[in-house]
Length: 163
Image (cartoon, rainbow, N blue to C red; front, top):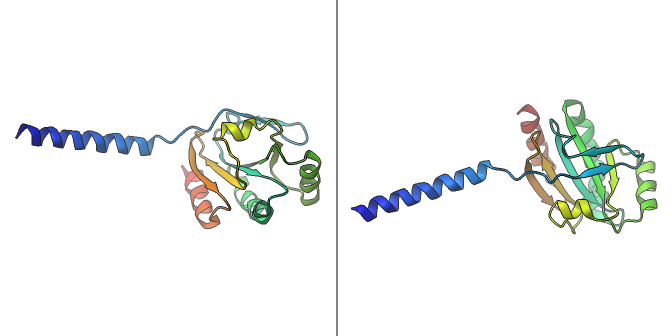
């Protein structure tokens, strides 16, 4: 009988630990960004907003294909407290990034990760596109490798803007 009770207690403890692990979302790393025109921001300065950090490169065909959708998402939700930070990878030539941003008039924050420190802080990002959705408290909600499912992404943004 004692073994049975101990087994039940053990199962209950494991269930509680698993439940709490699901509730405790990982925090976004503390990083500082400088955009192409010299404005600075950080993960701390973006708290209170839902943020999508997108790692991309001008040489990445998937990145170029998703960029108009990222723009549309930004334009749809920015008035409600949503922000996009596009992080150009360290191997992307700065003049290519600057030309692309100028030619397309991207409406969001674009930064060059010339040292690779931002990609490293977000978990050694190497594949592009990779996007990380962050809630208003600075917790990571979801990580996408490859183009996000934009229907799901929009639902997550809407849920977290309301929270």
